Length: 137
Image (cartoon, rainbow, N blue to C red; front, side, top):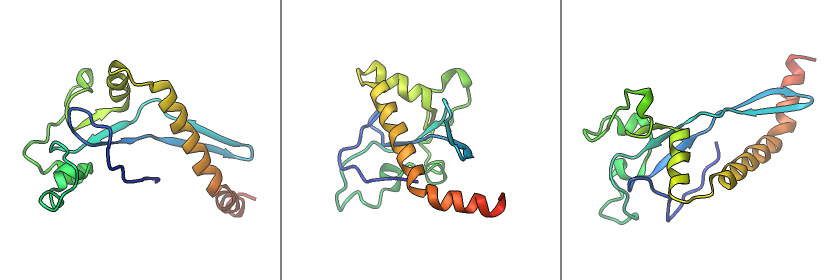
């Protein structure tokens, strides 16, 4: 997992969110990486405000973990495949569509995400390759 705290996060509906992007490494030599087209986004359940002493303990505002936010009475469960653009757990496709509708360059964003994925895997490649070689010579 790679993460960095953003002081001015991109918000949807005034809420912080994270993206779950799933990656499969199907081969080591040659290295073969697949990024699933679908993933999910997890949303905080309280409207975001920059961190201040009076709101730092509001985990529903600053954290996007499902395990935490599902306990907030404001949590909206998404129970319909047709409405993956509502609720506090949404499809990645619906988030990218929302961003595109807002004028964001989603293609460029995806290219940057893929670049991060590749660089992250390459960073761990020597260890990964050695581990696989020790099990499957």
